[in-house]
Amino acid sequence: MSHLATAGKMTGIMAAFISYTAKNLPDDVLARLEALRSQETEPLAVEIYSLMFRNLQLARELDRPICQDTGYMQFWIRCGSSFPLIGELEGLLTEAVRIATAETPLRYNVVETFDEVNTGTNTGTGAPTFWWDIIPGWDGCEIYTYPAGGGCSLPGHAMVLMPGQGYEAVVDFVLERMTSYGLNACPPLLVGVGIGTSVETAALNAKHALMRPVGSCSENERVAKLEQLLEDGINAIGFGPQGLGGRHSVMGVNVVNTARHPADLGVAVSVSCWCHRRGRITFDSDLNYTVSTHSGFDMGGSK
Image (cartoon, rainbow, N blue to C red; front, side):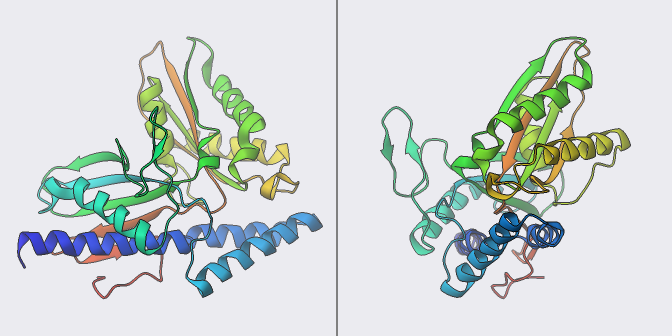
């Protein structure tokens, strides 16, 4: 297969994957929502969960996106330095977004800032967004797709705490943000918390946290304890599914941290709504692929 044909093949697979993930939730999110529904006792909350699952059923039957807000596409890429399409990856993923927008179809959600013009393709200046990790010597590529809806982006926030405030201030920061803005993000939420040395590192860590499976916990025991404390604290707020009351306000809290300067403690929050449509697909150098998030996706080239 020629290099051009290989690029075209990957573009087609990614366009189909983007479309599929707009219409089908990841397996772990479905399982968590089922668990939360089974634990709910408030009649209105139970009804809301039933409506959510009816919505998911109709999306499958009618072959339509789960939510009218089909999001602003973001990609987290872990690419081997020897992957044959590394140089074209951003271009072909951008083209995949254009194709998926027309064929799914996806709502037009990219507006050029200051010009206030909707591009009509879900692409534009800096759109879609790409974050990269380069893995030396590997010839594969792992791509997380994440169409962030407008509501789930509203609680996002980052700051650097003053020296000496400590981890108690991290908890205060997260709970204040969730209390003030969490309702805007269509709960139950997946809350990503990032900790680092600056607003940039904390914000990237918070976004990275949303790529982790729902129900996972940090390998660091202290961080895992913080995740559970934050989950319990946000659930205690009691806004429940869609903010109308219930036992669970979140699907979980994921914390990702990196080392920091001794004088700084950067913290950030990034949030996903109940229809957390992130997807994970991994390619080898021949473009055989494995999808770890959705058991139903297969174009005939899966491993």
